[in-house]
Image (tube, rainbow, N blue to C red):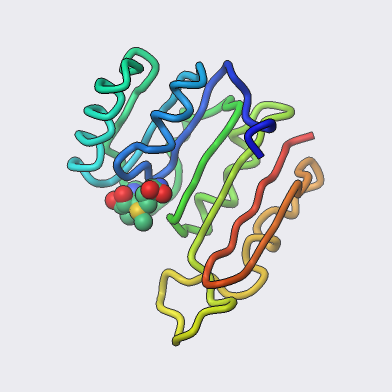
Length: 155
Ligand SMILES: C[S@@+](CC[C@H](N)C(=O)[O-])C[C@H]1O[C@@H](n2cnc3c(N)ncnc32)[C@H](O)[C@@H]1O
């Protein structure tokens, strides 16, 4: 899927954790806004960006996304949301992408799980339900082994 990832423009990494995806995107040449509720995660993301020489391309901010994405976050060429399940945030992604922009989303899933699902596990089909806008194309989708992932593109 790397061919779908632009090499320039603006990226958003939602719930960035230690910043692995943020640094990868910045190393490709993208300017990245990275958000996480945890101050420790933001400090680790800043440190990782610094260590890889891409700090000038990374704007990491502590932000609680429980109630959605801040309104001023718009016009992204790519959005990454890995292992953070918040339906309101996911439903907003299509409105935050530029035309032809792409989003990569992964959540824990109850599909293929070998134990009872917890509150972070999405029920079957949730990602497909979220991305139903007419201007969104589903490029790829998979549910298996306790994970669900989807790649979408704005038309
Ligand atoms: C499983 S980790 C995934 C981190 C990263 N995306 C990755 O794939 O390595 C989940 C992340 O979501 C963040 N998180 C949890 N609740 C959040 C919230 N309400 N707002 C923003 N970030 C949150 C956590 O701090 C944590 O860094």
